[in-house]
Length: 77
Image (tube, rainbow, N blue to C red):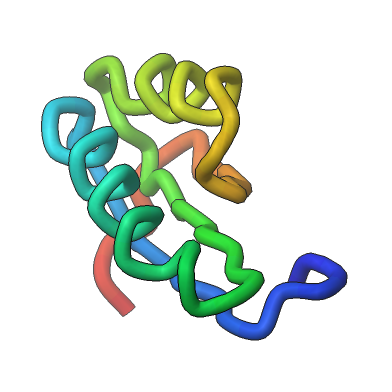
């Protein structure tokens, strides 16, 4: 957990390039007024533009985003 975060949201994702930026913006709008939080996206070996879109969200700031990436899909657990 990031220092100061009171809530951690973990999002598993695979090939979700189109969905994640909007989801992250919606989470930020809902959670930011409530206090410190962080979002951790676990990319399960995406082959689309998921990584690029996540990095773009991270670069623009606002959403306290951490990205973990599996090189190859690990599947559901």
